[in-house]
Amino acid sequence: HCLVLYIISGVACILLYLEFRHIARLRLLHLKRATPNPGQFTVLVRGIPKTKKESCSSAVDDFFTKYHASSYLFHQIVYKTGKVQKIMTGAKKACRKLKNFTDTTVDQSCKAITYRCCLCGASSNSFQLLPTDEVVPSRGKVDLDDSSLNIDNE
Image 1 (spheres, rainbow, N blue to C red):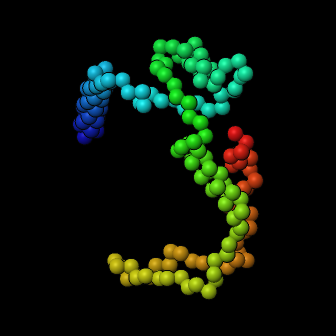
Image 2: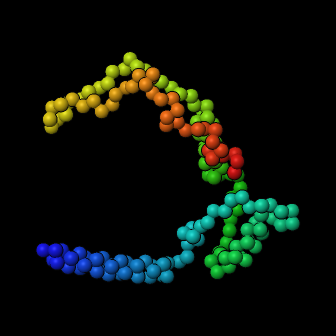
Image 3: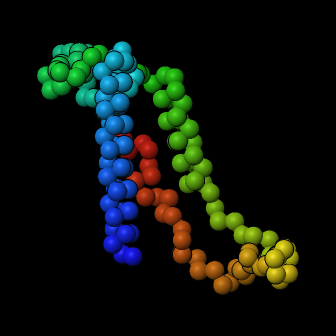
């Protein structure tokens, strides 16, 4: 019986390998035939040092033509406008809200809701409220003063 299982496993592996090889050929053929789309090969570069001699655009162009000449097509400079700026300001607002967030306690007068299980008829108490004196204050809290959360330190 074990020999038959080994044979079936081996045949399955061979078939998977052949299918993978076929799909890989189809993918390469598709990439060769397709028109080049620069959006497929986009690299986001941040923190480019500014010099007084040359503009930021020419610094990026010089760097990529020097080190990645075979694959470099063009570049586009995005300043603090549009979607990138909206994302950054949204992240800063969320970080400020997290810093201002204080611990809230759950209203202890709430009762846990119990439902009857359809299969066995027993009640389910999956959620239970803990009294505030049993909760360990330092357990599971995130240090919001951590410098890794600070967006301004970029």
